[in-house]
Length: 168
Image 1: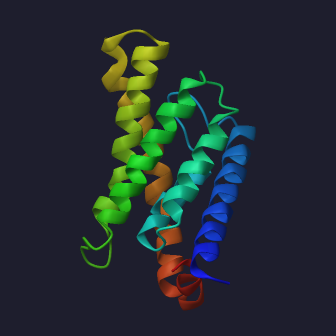
Image 2 (image 1 turned 90 degrees about the horizontal axis):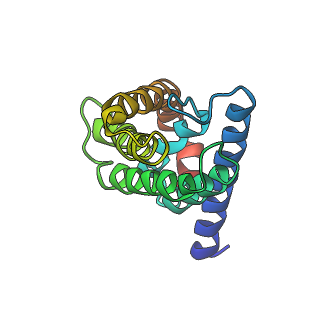
């Protein structure tokens, strides 16, 4: 298989897994709203290992947000938050402290907190006073998933040469 086909295939598989994990989160009421615990957000660490994760996660988020309980604008803003987070995660992947890339882990927390928090405050609540509380709640849910499940995924990939090679 040529490199372009491999890249597209990796992106498609990552998108499909993101959608499936978001659907699973939605079954338990964890995927939408001010506090979100999307299991799929653990995958936001994948751009550290795999550039194809950038379009994969972006497409996955777009597709998952089609069925969001929020307004269709969530497809735009939620997807942009994921795209920006993926780009920064990839760009900062070599900024490592004691074997851990902190900026790459913080980017989905910051972008989702700010962008989705703004979406909730300004588009849905129409109240600027709730921006910081909304941003904080979204960021807290994102941080919980990224720093718990994402960290486990990160170290599982780090320790598994076959999985790491598969993602390259």
